[in-house]
Length: 86
Image (cartoon, rainbow, N blue to C red; front, side, top):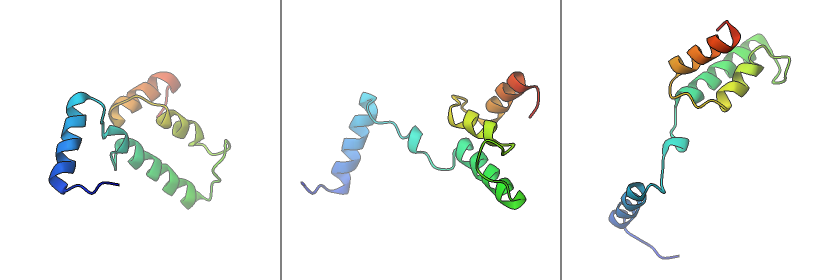
């Protein structure tokens, strides 16, 4: 494997970003999805709930994973329209 400098790597990433091939969005840490899933996990652990379809947050978790919403606010609006509750 060829070793490259930091400058060469940065130039390569910039080139990929410009071409549209490279996108960091799926790897972005602490997105609204990550934060909400962490909150669901904390609540489930605190209440002693198992991670299965008997968990009251199970449907919300699956919906979050498959959601295209860009923010938690947009997701909550979609969730409320679909389920009539938070």
